[in-house]
Image 1 (cartoon, rainbow, N blue to C red):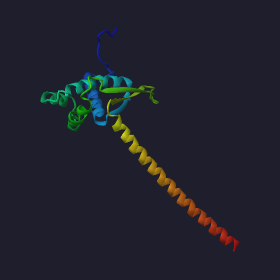
Image 2 (image 1 turned 120 degrees about the vertical axis):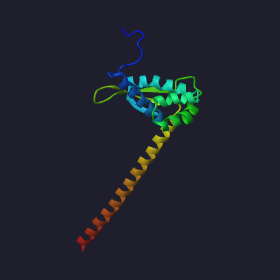
Image 3 (image 1 turned 180 degrees about the horizontal axis):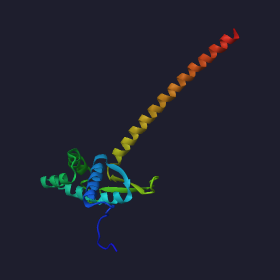
Length: 164
């Protein structure tokens, strides 16, 4: 029985597990949303929420503690300047785990873990990607139409030569 046993082992050594959680936390704070397995997402959720709670104090000791966990200085600066300003007023629950289904290769359950108040950032990126995709499709369609017009002219010229 696993009474009072906290955390998942992920079949890794403790140092490997710590490195995994650090990298997942860094990626989550950098990109605001990551896709991973459900178990890793759940473990990352508690890890990141503890970091954000510590960072809410916004003093030198908190900054040093966070920097001992997250090695990317740009991410730490972003955490203390933007992320705390946006979600620091919450009494907890800074992240959300959304289950996606199973992965094709090994049938592992997949999930998205994201920071709660950053839907507008994600939606803006998605909208930008959609606009680029539509512009590319329009350009391709115009190119195809121009080629069709040229092909029609060639066919007309051939038919005109044959009638002479």
